[in-house]
Length: 406
Image (tube, rainbow, N blue to C red):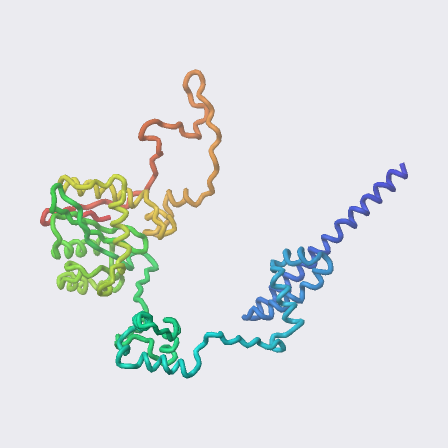
């Protein structure tokens, strides 16, 4: 019995001795990492931190070896070798080797002769490539084309011969929206009609912060009067106060019209436009139009004005309640517009748990596991999303268009 206890004690001592060394190594690594964190907090430069890190490698290398020490601190061994070689032999003591001159390098007389030839009346307006080809046809070789360019560059003659205007680097104008109803973007796009050269026009007012379409309209023509009435009726419905909203648009005829400018001035709304000859200064409206026209169900042509309105009504319902935009972190537009979490956003932030395996129905056809929805057939397999209504939709008729406000 006593021999068995002695053997067990010896085994435990050997196990403790085996574990004591890795524990000491781990403790050393933790202390080094704490000291490195302190160095990183007290200085803005990485140079003291690197020197401290290299100095900490010596005790670790003695206890666990070079390879494991570098792996534990995340230092490449090549970096350590380079640091030690620089410490052993400083860079200031190493003489920099002088680069030998090429054997075919032109001397001063040949360089000056080549420049005189390039400055002469025969080749003063010719490029080095033309000079090189002309001299080869005559059986003469002075230097390569690249050497001619080097000589001209040293003489300051390789720049543009004309004096073009060099534009400075201007800062691009930016518009910032930190909440809904601070920045709107609006535009007009064409929808193909039933026959060639016939179009319907879709007016869209888009909130940039939430990507929510605050108003849209389909009409038979592009008109300043229609755009003015759309904006006039949308601002009161959204509760826009004076000095609150900025409306951005491109430089179309309806957007830059005097009637729209006077209306926005009366409403206290700031208007901005795209820069001249810049096609990507209104990206949010263009991206929304691309989402509309690249949908699988978008028809090549619309049979009538009512057909276009019905399609847009279904599209904007999907765009508001089902489509998740990457620009707003794939949140539902009710969340980003109102700021209050909706039923769908609360469900999106809950951790996903896989459903339990459905139990087959009994002999009478009763579902023994009602928590798991039964799979449906046909086009109704996708469950219906529960959404919250955004309010009543009003229809305003003027000049035969239909406006939809949310």
